[in-house]
Image 1 (cartoon, rainbow, N blue to C red):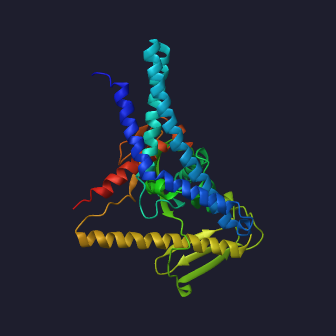
Image 2: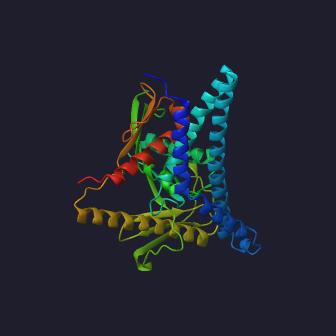
Length: 372
């Protein structure tokens, strides 16, 4: 098989990057950055802490995105210059350096291209993530806690702030459930493909006979609600319980009944918050979580209704999506995209970008090619 000419690769990458620049609309991005900088310079902004943090997060994200695009354009130009220098001087070392950088730039442009595929109505939102232990007893509770760590480590790798709203600890080990928010633009569009059941196969550390155990945990990802969203919630449809926050092993972490659990009776949706000291603050946060879940439920129902009217089937991503096998061999494999990794330790430490990028492409393909 003949090697691909670097000049052909450079032309192809130039065309891809030009397309990305057009989709992202760099002039509009520059105007948005200028507007956010003006807002952030207003001394009155910090009178509203929540709004101030939203503005600064959006500004930081847009500046980083702009720098990423312009930086890649400069790197691509530099690679072309390296090849010209290598040719003029007949320098093998410079040619090797150019080849290495071309591979790196190619991968970086592919990663940036994924961002242009996120064009859904709520993709630009922050993400609200809920993890529940499913079948597997204490191993499932331990597995749910490992997944929580995996996603928080992933967010840390990208400098995305996270905030844990609620964690319900299991009696022996691990957690029954947890809800946390990833506070970054496009966090929902990035993570929505992670929604579903994650399966772990390993030698159970909780089995004194050292037997292999299969356990499951469910992941739910919904977009964070914004002021423009309208979700009708009748107070008479709610049951509100207050209780004392607890930690691992049932240990109390608060001396007052500040934690809040809200049950939406018509749907059975239950949300909790215990991260604030104030019961009122916890109730407000829990109501935001409930609104997000009801908004997503409404969106799904509308999508199913439209699909039914068109005579289309609906894709069910909320099933088993990924296997994490630690015994008798080691592999992590996505059941939809076929992407796999032979280092589960790295994956569980947050190295999941390859899985996320592949599923974003897969979802875009599913949405553009509806089944009949």
